[in-house]
Amino acid sequence: MSKQVRGPSDDTRANLLHAALRLFGERGYHATSLQDVIDAAGCSKGAFYHYFDSKEDLLLLFHDTFIDHLLDFAERKAAEPGNPLERLLSIFRHHLESMSTFHDHMAVFHNEARFLTHEKFRLVQVKRDRYEAAVRSLVQEARDEGALRADLDVKLFSLALLGVFNWAFRWYRPDGPLPPEAMAATLFGTVVEGGRPR
Image 1 (cartoon, rainbow, N blue to C red):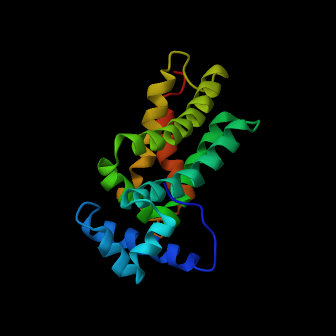
Image 2 (image 1 turned 60 degrees about the vertical axis):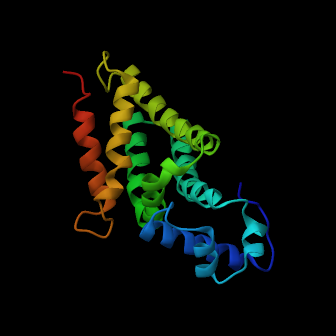
Image 3 (image 1 turned 90 degrees about the vertical axis):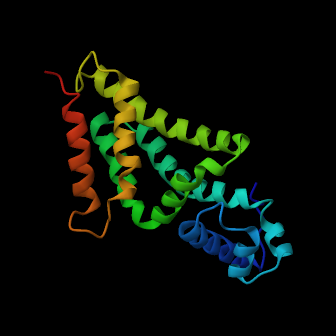
C-alpha cells in the first residue's frame, strides 16, 4: 500500500505519481517497468520505496484518488433531504465535472485494472460498492416516492445509470461544446425517462 509519509521530499512522491500516470497512459501498466517510473521521476529506488511498496500501489492510488473524490460527494448527497432525482442528478453532474481533473486517472485505471491482484482489487471493489450503494439508495427513494415506476428493478436501473456515466470518460470532453451540467442533464434524462411511471 501507499505509505502515508509526509516530509520535505513530498515533491518526490508527486513526481513519481506524475511520471507513473504519464507512462501508464502512454505505454500501459505492464509495459512500464518500475525503473522506468523511477527514471522518469528523477529519483532513486530507495526514494520510491520510501513512499510505496510496489508499482501496483501506484495503480491502486490512481483509482483511490478519483473514487474518493466522487464517493465523498455521492455519500453526502445520498444523506441529504430533498428530491431524490435532483440529488442523483447532482451526483452525476459532479461525476462529469470531475473528469477534467481526473480524466487521466480514470482512463489509466479502467484500461489497466486487470493487472491488479485479487487482494488489491478487493480494496477497489469496496469503494465501488459504496458508490453504487449511494446511487441505489436514491433510486430506491425515488421509486418509493412514485417518481419512478413501482415495478422498476432498482439495482439494474442504478447499474444502467452508472454504466452511462462511468464510461463517458472515453468520449466526453468537459471543454467541448456541451458543458458538464448540460451533458449530465441530457444523459441522466435519457435514462430516467425510461423509468418514469407510464
